[in-house]
Each structure stands twice: as C-alpha cells, then as structure tokens.
Image (cartoon, rainbow over all chains, first blue to last red):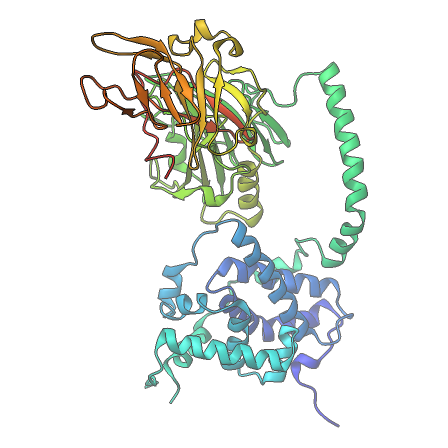
Length: 166
Length: 373
C-alpha cells in the first residue's frame, strides 16, 4: 500500500485541520509573505481567511494543502489589486531588515506576483514544478515561464555571484 | 554553491507567522465567500433597482416630513450619513462606523470643515493651529481619520485653471509631515479645488488600521461631490457660471455683454462693460472690455475685437493688443504699462466655466506661461 503525504490526508474535523495548520501554515504564510512582497498584513489576512474557509468546509475538501495555497494566493491577489487603488502602508521595511531580508524584499517587489509565488514555492519550499502549478492553480508550462523570468530578474537585481553559505 | 538570490531566498525560512492566526481562523471567515459574490452578481441589478426606488422614496419622505439626515451641527454618531457643507454645499458620504462632526473655527482665518474619525477625538487637547489639530497627538494605532476644510480670510487664492478631478482618488494626495506629532501618522494631503474654491483634505491611517477602516476612509474621500452649477448664476458671490466648456471651441473669443451678467454693476467696476472669454489651447481666460489707461492721457474705452487679425483695440485711439493682451503697433512699449490683464477662467468639475470678476487690474494673476503655447 502506498503511503500518503501529509498534505493528501483529507481532514474531516476541526481537530484535523489544526494539524494541517501546524504543518502547513508556516510555509503557506512565508509563500504569501513573499507573494505580497513583504506585506505582513496581507499574509496574515490571507492565511487566516483561507484556514477559516477550510474549517467551514471541513470534510468537503479533497486535497486541503493545495486548496489552502490556491485560496490564500487568490485572497492575497485581491488585496494587492485593491492596493493599486488605495495606497497602503509601505511594507514593514524595519521588520524585513531585522529578518535579514533588506535586499530580498525590495527585489521581490520588482517581480510580478505570479513570478514571486513560483520562485518561492519552487526554491524556498522546494516543491517540484508540477506541485507548484497545482498550488498556484495554473499549468506546469506557465510555472516554468514564471520561474525563468523570475530567476533572470532576481539575478539582475541581486547580482549573479555565488553566495558563501558559511 | 547557490547564487546570491537563492541565498537571500533561503533567509525566508527564518520568518514565522504571527501567533494567533489559528484563533483568527477559528473565528470564521471575514470576507464574503466567492460563491456568494457570484450570486450577488446575478441579483445585483435587481437589488440596485430596488435600492434606488427605496432610497428615492425614503428621501422624498424625509424631505417632506423630517429634518435632513445629517445636519452639519449634529453630534458625532455611528450611522451611515450624508454630510452637506452648510457654506459651499459640497457633500460626503460617511460609512457606518465612522463618526462625523462639522467644525467651524474663527481666528486670523475662518475655517469651516468636517472631521470624520473612527474613534472619539480628544478635542480638548491643546492646539495652536487653525483648524485645531491637537486631537491628532493621541491618534490610536488602529484608527483612521479624514478631514476636509476650507478657509476664508487668509491669503487670497487665485482662481485655478481647472477644478480637481472628481471623484478624488489617492493619486490626488501626497504624503506630508505630521501636523502635531505624538502618535499622529503621516497624513495624505490634497490641496484641491471644487467649483473654483480651494479646499484642503487630509487622510490619516494608523499603522494597524484594518483593511475595512482604510477602505472606509478612502471611501469618504471618493464620495466628495460639489454641487452642479447653473449657467447664469453668480455662484456664492464670487464666480459667474458661464456655459459648458464644450460650447466654446479652442481659438474662440466670446463676448459677454454686461446685460448678460447678473448684478454686474454692483459686483465690480471691471465688468460694467462685460468681458471677452478666450479659449486658448492651454487655458480659458478673460479680458475685460473696459479699458482704462492708468496714466496720462487717461484713455478709457470699451474694447472691440477684430476677428480678422485676432486683435483687441480701442476704437478711435490707435491702441491695439494681441491675443494675450500685449500692446502692438505704434504705441507698444511707450509710456505706462498698457498690457491688458488676463484673468484665468476655471473649468469647473461639472464642465461649466467659472469666472471671478474680482480679478483684473488690481488682483493680477499669472496664467503660468503663454496659454497659446
């Protein structure tokens, strides 16, 4: 019998979702944080709302983690669209600096939202392209294009020299 | 070894979501679910039609039997209201949950305006400015506020070439420094014009204001409307309301005789002979028909316009001017300043042309360059 990945478990109760939350929320929140280019409020709202909706539909969602990603990404995209009409506070630059992201957050802002999502899911969450596509609700081909363009832009913005991890 | 951008990306791992997200999720969804929105799209036209009927009926009843829903002097309250400025008649719509209060302060300058807040402002806080801004010093982090005000008695603002574009949007605003400091957030500020009158609008958004509160604050700004003008009126004792801009083609010169202007003799000596309205590519402006030479030999005449040469002239005197009021011919450059003052006319928010007869010989105003270039 093939084992199931944690994200393939179909939770039926609120208690199950709490486990999904513990496992998936940090990665989901980081993805939305990057997708929203450092706007913590957008990430907080989108993740909380996505889980709230999932809890409301407990037992009806076949594959909760990709569902949560798609929902949170859509909610965050709505917020970013609204932001174009209404100025919002700048991304919390002090907090980004404190987290060592002073270079990354401004660079992410230069990418499109889809490029940001693809880059973070693939390179930060280490998901394969097909899984990235599933979580973004798009095709693998589209994800490859987003990755290609996102990588190219990040290299331009942050330099293409190799970093020393030590 | 990873490239630098990959290295930077890995730093995201250090970030953790804030505590309390699960509690927020347990409290249930806050937004309208997508399915409900689709349903709403179907019923929206019906609901809108019904709402129009209900609102029109309610308004008619209220007008017939009750006081207006938001008197400017009414105390702060928590119902959705329409505020009407008692002086200039502009209106705003204040969403439910925000407080609105009209204020009037006199000092060196008389200020009239409205203050909309999501919290009870501390109006007893000491303040030196006009209008009093001391209440901003203890601005709650999750609060929002909007203030719209006009002033009289300060430096006279010349008529603008054009009103601000309505509805106002955040793009009409710029960030300025806080007025009083303390916990006051940096305001968004607009120096705007409506129906030819200058007014100020400022929006404050606390760093932890909710999305709904921010949206409500900007909704107040977007709802600002000025009254529609009526052609032929002398608007608030300041502006003649002429026809719509589209009626005067670019390059046209239109004469307004004194007889077409309400109370022209009482208003200003400048307009006792009427004026010409000129539509240049960059602006509308006015040249008064009455010409009075300021020094000897004290010539006075009623200007005529020569369409063939596009020149203004004093019949029987040899005095001629080009389209921007500069003297030409034999008398150009000799003796006193013979320039005809150009007075800007304003394209109002609803397309009418406004012209203030109080500007001219004494109160001269710069048209910001050649209106024909």
